[in-house]
Length: 631
Image 1 (cartoon, rainbow, N blue to C red):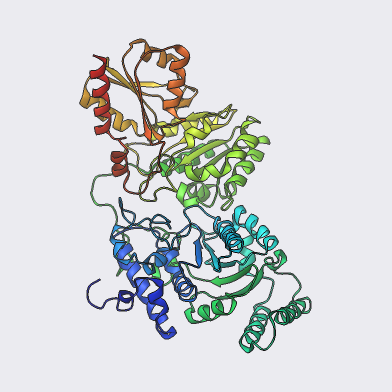
Image 2: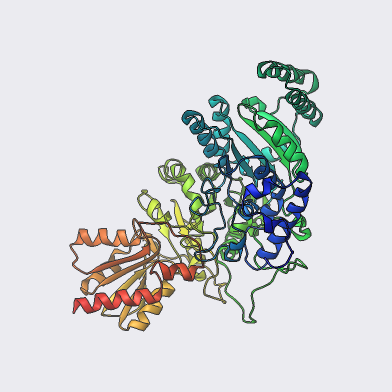
């Protein structure tokens, strides 16, 4: 960094450097971190508001605890940019979320300070609890801290861990970063509870001060200090009418405190870090702190894209020509149209109203739109209950998040044959969010389930047509589509239900045929035209397959290439190979998809397709090899 724009950060290459600073300089460190994040994220887009709100928590944790020996586990990872900045990655921020650059989430392969892979919500307490137990059993003397925020505490996994933590009597500290936000405004009664904790602040302050005084005196034993604390706990029956929810689970509770008072946080952490057993420190923060536009509209600034750091104005995509819409927006608008025609249609999502564009339906039919919070399994079974009693639920969930609800899909929807429509957003390679967010497996894990109809549109018209067909179905459907824009500017067709299991031939060709599914068909068409005399078929449905079309393609004896934006194992390629084996077909077959032997990192979609040999150039090479070898 040039000059003295960040004089304190220039001295911090690790948390050890931070710990050498006097406490009086910590507010200035926090200020520099925020200015640095504003400067970098304005031109290298990422998760902005959450990290801005967690700056003081981050600084305090690395100041008080001996990281990396002490463990900090970040939930989701939206909050962790300040953590990356303090742990030796300052100069890598110009590569944030770029190919081979800094990951947008904690990644143990990137730094020893990143103790656990993050990207999905509510897993931090479970992982930290496991580390705490491991520390105890192996004789390691370390502290373990879980930092959970952005409404991840509402996830069922978090409460499973909380339930287990007290039983395990683990030496675990949980930091609840309560910013009153998820990506959108959080829903559910737990959020209301956190806003109005029944244990009074006065009582918690008294108990904390009692412990702090005894700790500083160091004149009595730990056992007697514990006795005094139990006495202060007994005062609760006189002070308040209801028990604190966390204390009801035998987790010692401290707070709520101002999560932006760095010196207060440092003092509290210093006082409670050596306490034994599970503890929870409740810190109230402002998502987007330090950037007025983000403070005023934290949902819009969760991941804002490019923006002007001085004005807060978002920078729109350049170019005067109209651009195709995002698939998620076509979904939201189409579902709203279908709901206007059928009052039984409802929409469900798991804390992703804006991310899936179910917010469009919410504006028109708020009473028929349900955001159930970070609870994908519940969302699926909730939809099953609705379908069982006559409604037509459309469940909009990201591909990588739907993995968490696999058992619910099988047991609560498929076995009963209920007409639930799963609209799977972010299917395939998603780009810069990387390994935890790619929708690599949905075709593979859903195809074996009996009774599911599985389809993928190649463009916006097809998405609308498939949704219209699904709205009339009497059994469960899956419609998957990617992140980002489609290919049509004139997309608002009159939806026409398509015939189930019917493919469409897009190009004729005698030398080879590409069987593709989803918008990646665009790469197939480019490759076929460049190679020449190569056919392209939009399979449209993975299940049921269009066997008549397959028979027609295989009858020529020409090589077959399958192309899908999914794992190469278990999806379209596997389905075609299985069919060919049953039929005894001798055509040469090459399956193209996401690799089976490794996970895909982050970068643009184009860069990652090129690297994984899923783009038109790679397909041309494969076609030429197959055609030449056949001769």
